[in-house]
Length: 239
Image (cartoon, rainbow, N blue to C red; front, side, top):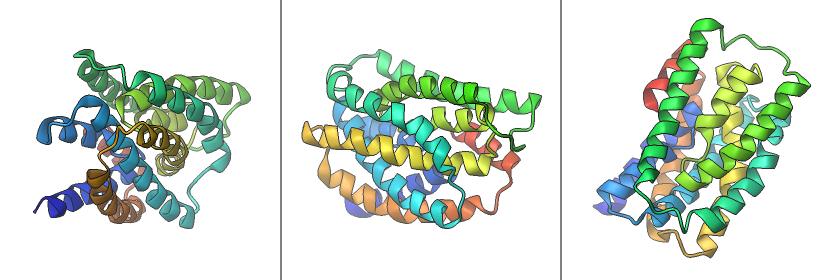
């Protein structure tokens, strides 16, 4: 029964995480902490492995749709990769605090409010060429985001999607797709470090991973049927 539950949970996480470019950690970490009573570092480590598998599947699907802006993805991923590695190796094992949930909730609220409020001021679906300054600002923000995302096990899409849509001028469809590719690179490093440190429940990660691989394909297909305004609303509501 438990494998079937994990498969179904993984499929739902994969679909929503890929649809919104978030990876799914914002759903998975609370489930592992409260439903399965995982210790915080194991929940974070397991989440990163599942996010990585989700991102692999989602990135393949979005690449076929030609929605990924690889130059902007690398702009965000290059600083996020070492930040994720550092946080996974040195912060995750030590950050066991009641403040974890406060930080977790605060980041999700930030993502939802920022996207929806900014959407009232300008059309996030209008594409524009990002300036050199905007690229550098986002690279710096990505360094900080990589540490926070790796520490909390959320992948980082809650940071990358707003950066891509608001600061870099990507329509939400392309922002979510590009975010998934950034998650692939950053979560791969975080997952590798945490597996090496033994902070992953491999059995849970594999069953959930099988589910997210299938769910990610469904999420990428569903994204083609939603307009930018709908995706913004779903993004804010989900987080």
